[in-house]
Amino acid sequence: MKMKIGRNPSTGTHLRQLIGQAEFCEVDPSEDLARVAAVRQALGPQGKLMVDVNCAWSPDFAIEMGRAMEAQKLYWIEEPVATDDIDGSARVADALTTPIAGYETEMGLYGFRQLIDCGAVDIVQPDIAWSGGFSEGRRIAAYAQAHHKMVAPHAFAGAVLLVASLHFAAAAPNGLLLEWDQNPNALRDELLKEPLRLENDGTVRPPERPGLGIELDRAAVERYRSG
Picture 1 (cartoon, helix red, strand yellow):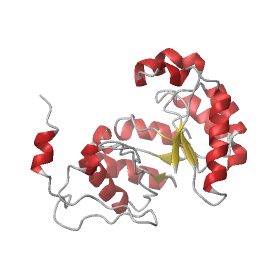
Picture 2: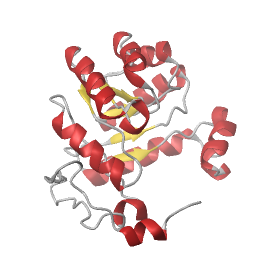
Picture 3: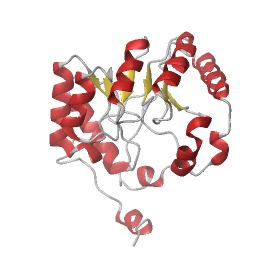
Picture 4: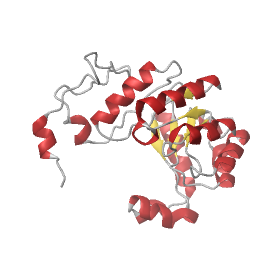
């Protein structure tokens, strides 16, 4: 399970612009710690719990918060600092025992190579819609594998990217997992004639037909067409 955290008054202006919710930023970070503890208690000690900061923290604050969450045995902390703060992320990764995952907005092998070479990430998270598609994604995954890193692609969008990322993760020898957003999402749930099905054990079977193995529901495409 992955949950969103990252309240930080010092970056409030940036977050207001990003998510358009001023009230989200105007909360003491201690509430994030309480929420993470509550979710861990509900999930139990064996469940995988990840937190996503969406680049909201400074390196020093990320280290402070990471240490404060150590008792919750997090599976990873995602994007604790800005994507281009490679040295800062490396400092966070070196200071914490919790693995650092990221960074979905990085572009191409060159950027991910820097993250990996500097020790800025423990788990590599390309978004193949941004990082260069299947071809560049495979290069990123291969470079990560050569450095003993697992890959968990970011796929927080519609059905087409989700299916493509599912195939990518399944084909990568070092594929770890694929996130499955639990928020309502019509472009994920209605766009396919045969929607993907999340099993009770948390697994998804990739389509086996040619290509991505999907057929779009044309009525849904027209219903949500923009422009």
